[in-house]
Amino acid sequence: MVTDYLLSCVITMCEIKDFFNSKAASWDSEIVIHADRIEYLISLLDLQPFDRVLDVGCGTGVLEDFLPDDIRLMAIDFSQGMIDEARRKHPNVNYVVDDFLTMKTSAMCYDKIIMHNVFPHFLQPVFAVKKAYELLAPNGILLICHSIGRSVINQRHSSINNRLSVSLPLVKELAQEVEHHGFKVLQAEDENDYYALKVQKTI
Image (tube, rainbow, N blue to C red; front, top):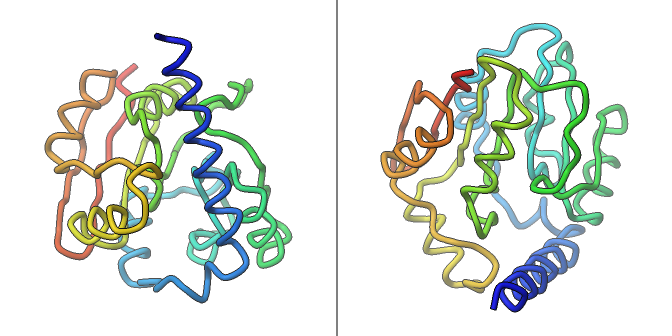
């Protein structure tokens, strides 16, 4: 039974990867970039010069248009197509094709991890939270955020293919969950046009 479950997860993750690879070339023309909301969400990170920052599920590099140049940034996505588009736009950014859940823990931990418009695509979200804890430096910050509202996200995802994502929970529910995994909640906002959960590693 466990083997069957793990196999089904692998198959589903391959479906998600194939979906984003197929959409990569046209992605930027199909999405709406809410610059004011993204700028606000990034401000929650309180980025400092030389901060070690990980952009998880970076897609075509939307955030890199808004992040400062004086941070030490790595941006990852498991879609080769998305990374190819991101590299074309931002050739000087350290983009890596990798699966966040299985990426190796290096000697360098991160001061800030941002998950922008990606969290529902972790089909077992608790593993994403645990991995972030593993990769963060002591007192490091994790920001789970969306530049559109939760109800819009859930409606959009359900209309495409519910095998490709899970529902984004109420922010207070997600806050309670992450507190069980070594984080302290610093800020939680569940608004009509954006979603943000900022938490800090407590150890």
